[in-house]
Image 1: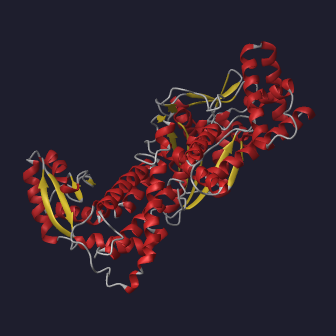
Image 2: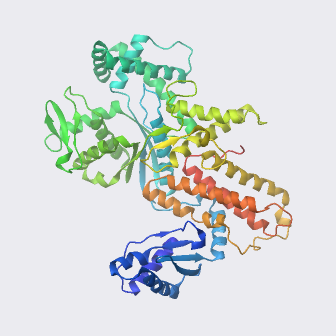
Length: 571
């Protein structure tokens, strides 16, 4: 409908011999002001230096000459907005459309025939899975699903730093303090490795002898010249990667590609050295890229340091070119923390000079930091908070709230996982990309208001209504779908918007548009549920109301899937 209105406006502007301008068509916050509203008259009036309200009336009259059969009326409001009101038949038809399309409801063909690779999560072996990785995972997973919903063949990729100073610090710590006791689980061993990394990192900063030893280990890790270090490295890498897989399983993430810095370093270094004098320059024994030569907003970065080792920048070049050589995606999306934004701009500029055809196909999206409403930066057990401990804490709190529920322990465990993950993912995805997130444990798991569990609970409630409705055996009753109320509910006015929201979320690569929409939709459903006795014998609209509930359930299920959130059978 939005595209129909847009096309209609463009035709009117042409008929009035007015310049075709860029205008917006939006849904008014208050449905009393129509189902769609446009600012086209105000935009045109500015250029024509005329009264926007008078111009709006003129445009309105032209629009009414060729009005779509689904629009009941047009009104001019405020300082020149043109508001469109849709007919009841439009909303009834949209409900039927949802029930026909089911799991395909909301999909579009914006990326039909395209291949898109989305890289996200990117934890480093030998280090803990920190909060930033949790955030990047939630955002990247959602973006990948939005891309898939938009018709693309989607490839999920994970880039992990298995070489570098952090590995040397962890190995130094393991050599100094010993390997973990036998019999520990993979998760416990990974946690111990993370603690050794922390100790090694502290010694690197405070002890000159330790610093020298760690730098020697770093070089040996790269060239694999020491049998003892190789043994510790291979064991530590395997354990931490297995621990990450356990976390991915809980988060509902699967990857087709795992790229590693150890492999990308060799490829990146070769490419950089081949382009010295063309793209890169030698400087004080290092190889650098002078970004400011091409854009004053860019800066100089080192790609191979004075010790002859490739830096993160060089590895990033190896990674990007490897992605294009392996899969040749139409779009390559990378998700990182916002502090890497400027660094990535420099790297992407260098890549574009080597491969100009890659420039428009590379996209970089960023997220802010997570802060805590309580001000505490430790887990519930008093440890330094990591992404994994935050995830476990969230699940534990849900489990505590369910302790008096009559269900099997295994079901409680499953629900606590699904709801705990939803609490965290929604808290991350509800904010616009780049902005910092304030995480509040109690609010995040609330079944009321702005939270992931609230959306799950409302969806489960809708499903329980549908299950109870089976007792009414509607097929033997006189209540038919043709018995439709004349009044359009807010629920119906939100439901049909879902495909538009999905398209907008893809165009902006911002999942928060879906999160915000689902919260409004859930609120509208709860209002409808509170005002309507759906399963009452005297409800002559029962058949239609149940179709409405089905449509809501399907839309919520599809929308939550796009956020990477599962809907449990019960809560």
